[in-house]
Length: 337
Image (cartoon, rainbow, N blue to C red):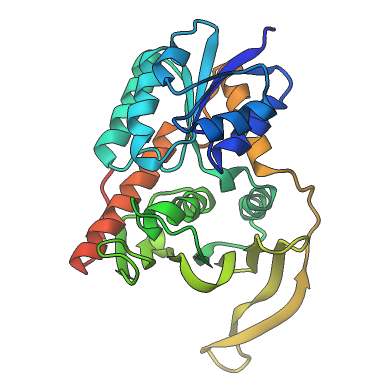
């Protein structure tokens, strides 16, 4: 089977990770590196010396050998560049968010379907071994029925001017929420503040209501003294926490909960606390970006539907848009489909 030729657009801080990952992947050739900054291009070429460096994405797409494009540019360019690549007949892996509006995200999903091409979104945490292990626990019923979950994604730094903390950070958390609950929310409520720049929220708290009574809450901020990347899942049987800042003990499963009992001699239900052991499971840790890139190549070669396909990207953008509307109005917003 011939190598898959890939063009990578965006060679900045995160794009250079794509260059390294695809550049060292068996069965893949990075043939074009695209960036408007000559310095970034030069650094990327040091990783993949055989690739052509250019500021012209259209020129890279004209190469008939190129079978796929990876787009790791700023968020506001995702829609235009992804559509350009799809119309040129290239499979596309685009960083999160898929687009900055539901309309543009829908356009990409429809274009990919019409062109019969793979469209995949870089929801990186879906390829994190710890998140997949947590999903396995849920699928096997180890935690019971999920009651609620919450996440924190905060730190000091990476302050952006073209998007707020919600659009910059929350796609990660929302994608995991959809993955773990295996359904989409029906309502969003949010609050946030713009402390550093007018009209750009530095901190956002939001709540999502899911069918069957589950709820998910998140806090995202780039104005915080702590660097926290944590998910907590509360089930009817057990509880679990995923802490991505932990070097080794990334998942802890708590045999804790509340039991409902009928006491002898009484027909009343009594609630009793259950305090059990804390289990720290072992699983093999692999770099999520390598898993994501390998999944993209597999989907292209075998015409498979990606885990984080265009529809998944659209679902996340639809929720982000609803949360944004709630931020502006201060009222709950119903999430459409």
